[in-house]
Structures are given as C-alpha cells and as structure tokens.
Image 1 (cartoon, one colour):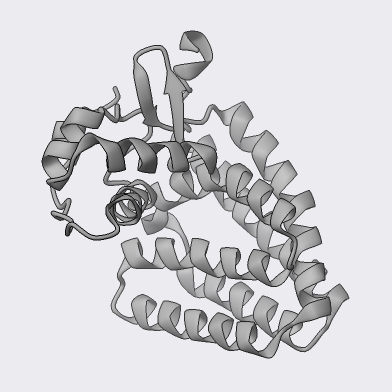
Image 2 (cartoon, one colour):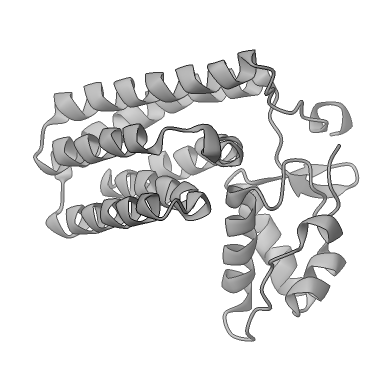
Length: 238
C-alpha cells in the first residue's frame, strides 16, 4: 500500500529562502533515492509546501523537474513517486545497457582530466561511506557516479535520456541497498573509472556489461525470493 507523504515526511529538512526550487528539488530527490519517499507515495503540493516551509510555486517547479527525469509520474489523482512493475524493470534494464554502453565508450574517448578527478573523488567518497556503512549516502553517490560518466560523454541528448530511463531503476535499487554487496559494486566502479580515464574504450564497455549483468542477476534473485517490484498503479489510472 502506498504511504501518504505525511507518513514519509520524517527527516525532511526545512529549506532556506534562497534558490528555493533547487533546494526543494534536492531534498525531494534525496528522499526518493534513499527510499524515505517510497514508490507510490502521493506528492501533494500543499503538504510538501507546509513541511518544507515554502510556498507552492517552488514545490510545483521541483515536481515538474522530477517528473521530467523520471522520479515522479502523473496519475489521475495528481503526482506520485514512480513505481515499476517487474516487466518495466526488465525493459528499462535492457535499455540502460544499450544507452550506458554508448555513454561509457564516449567518456573513454574524451576522458577530460578534470572530470576524471571528479570521478575518482566520488569513488573515494563511496569508499568512505562503505567503511561507515552509510547505505543511504552510498545509494546517492552510486547514481551521481554514473551521472558523472554520462556528463563525460559530452552528449546532452544521451545524458537526458539516461536520466529519464535510469532514475526509476535507482529508486528501486536504493530501497534494497542493504542486500547489495557494496564491496563488489565498488570494485566494478573503480575498474570502470580506470578504463575510462586511461582511454580504454573496449575495457570500459566490457566492464560496464559485466557490472550490469551482475546487478541484474542480483535484482532477479531478490525478485525470485518474493521481493517483487511494486506493480505500477499508474498503468490503470493514467
């Protein structure tokens, strides 16, 4: 059963009065990725505005941006955090493999030094969060690391499409972060970064394919154990 925003609002921070839309966007996106706002949670502008201490306008703008990148979907009753059926998940994963393979190959061809420094810093931060077992931050950094690679591909159309396709997948994966072998995941990430930053296009491609195969296998194992992806009610309400 989908929770109400009122039930999910614990931990939301009051935002300051500057750059309100960006601040609201950051707060909501972090809560969605971390699983504090679960799939199917209704996102009512008036409730969000009240809990965040802002007017409805920045909330409305933030929700529109979240919908544009796949975190939120419109249904007959308003907006809610996106949900996936098992079929959705499988289809999006196949599409992710095609798109992200293209992205890592382009990133390896370009490999700007400044971007590689950012990538390595992100991996260092992930290693620190793994040491203290901060799974919420790890899940966020995982997505940000992939987004950095998409940025390095220097193709805004590809990057925008990846944002739209992959955001719902990371929402689901973040909810099961405690079941993931983060040491193994981080090894895949570190190897991928080295392939990209050394200009090894083929190595980057093969590493990503192996990483995604591992990730999909892990997720299918969760599903076969009865941990089903929630069926999207939006299929019957839109």
